[in-house]
Amino acid sequence: MAKSSNILILTEDFYGKDFFRYLIDRLTKEGYIKGRHRIKFEWLSRKCNPKITRKLLPKSHILDKIIIVIDAEGGDKEQAKALVDRHIPSNLKPITRYIVFDYCIEEWICDGLGIRMSGYQHPVNCLNDHLRRTRGMDYEKSMLPDFVGEIDIKRLVNNNQEFREFLNSLR
Image 1: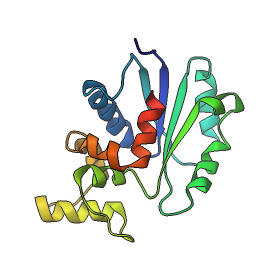
Image 2: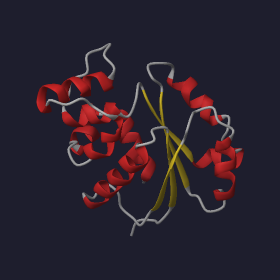
Image 3: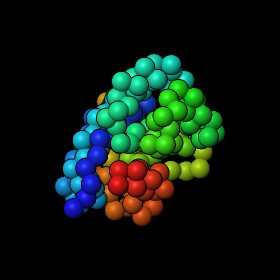
Image 4: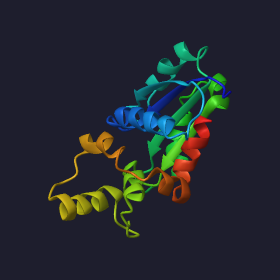
């Protein structure tokens, strides 16, 4: 039997809370996640934020894992991680995992839908172009959770390093 654990997922995207809630449900139903995890989802309003410490300290005695999902927006991924990490209490650093996107979470949507991202085009622009061509509509950030049911999880597992890291963080 798989171990039960208390996990907190902090996401930089406001709509990421629902995206991850739906994604975890789907991953559980499809057998990618085993065990009885109690997962909470919270919004991380910005990377360098002293409120992160105040948010985590009261929960530190009940958490088994913290997964922090942030965007590098084309910049240095280690620098993006460092902006958050400086606000993580030292007793929680050993249980904290980071998922840092090159640009943003829409990378998973593009990869999961098979949308080719040209080298210098932002994933949001690629997704927007795809939606204009296939559905005659523009992408809105609030649509993020709606894509959970459409993405090809197997494709993400096989082709996306950050997605594999995310799955491994949940195990």
